[in-house]
Length: 127
Image 1 (cartoon, helix red, strand yellow):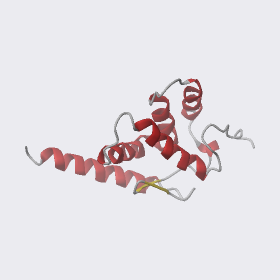
Image 2 (cartoon, one colour; image 1 turned 45 degrees about the vertical axis):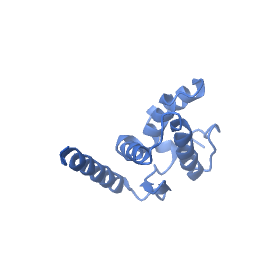
Image 3 (cartoon, helix red, strand yellow; image 1 turned 180 degrees about the horizontal axis):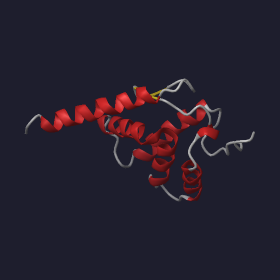
Image 4 (tube, helix red, strand yellow; image 1 turned 120 degrees about the horizontal axis):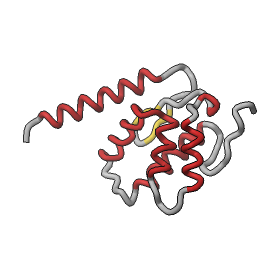
């Protein structure tokens, strides 16, 4: 096996970390989770409209589906940081069976930064 795949993976990881660093806009302080740092939007009202659909998907989900959790996470932190989270979960050896709990843990940390708990309805952007 050559070092090319390892070098490409390391380059991708470095680019993802740089994307996280570039996204810092002086808003909410970064969140630490499993040794990685994630930048959050300044407030829920600043999230893209996609967030509303992700919340709706999560509310109507049944069972242990990871798709609504992944969509919500992507709407919250963006695709670049989602890639960092994905890499960390792979690095940590998280199994498919463990993935919903790991994502719920991360979303709990993120929502906690906004003073919310998972399952709680956020206030309207006007409040």
